[in-house]
Image 1 (tube, one colour):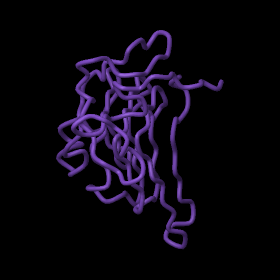
Image 2 (cartoon, one colour):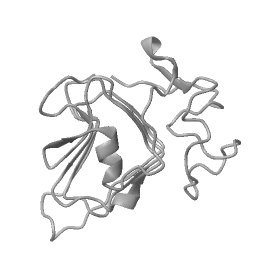
Image 3 (spheres, helix red, strand yellow):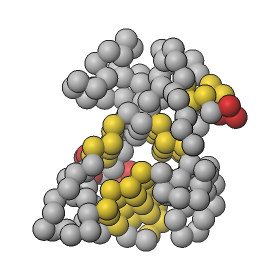
Length: 168
C-alpha cells in the first residue's frame, strides 16, 4: 500500500492552466506520499483522514506539496497520521506536525491514531471515541446528513453502517 501516490493533482502547464482538486471527506490509507499536490494553488482539502506508514525517505509523507501551493486556509480539518513518515514535505523540505501547522495549514486538524474499527481487515469505520468524530467542518451538499454535533472526518464516520467496496 505504500509504493505509489494515493491521490495526486499535478498541474503540468501552470500558470496557463489553473486546475483545481477538491479533496473532501476521504479516508486515504497508504501511499507514498498519500496526497501529492503540484502547482495547484486553487485546490482544497478538508475532512480527510490521511494515514501513511511509508518509510521511503524521498516520498514518504502524508502530504507532498511542490511548486505553487494551495492557500493555507484551504487545507484544514484533516486528520494526518504518519507514524513512520514525516507529516508533510513542502518543496522537498520535511515538515513535522508542528512545522506543518506553523505554515497555517490544518489549524483545526489532528495528528493522532484515528482509531479505525479493524485496520487488518480494511474496515476504516471509526471506533466510538475516535478523535475524528465530530471534528470536521460542514461542506454544503456533501456531509449535511451527518447526525453529530459536527461532521466526522473521513469517509466512514461513527454512524457508517456499510463497508466500502474495495477494488484492487
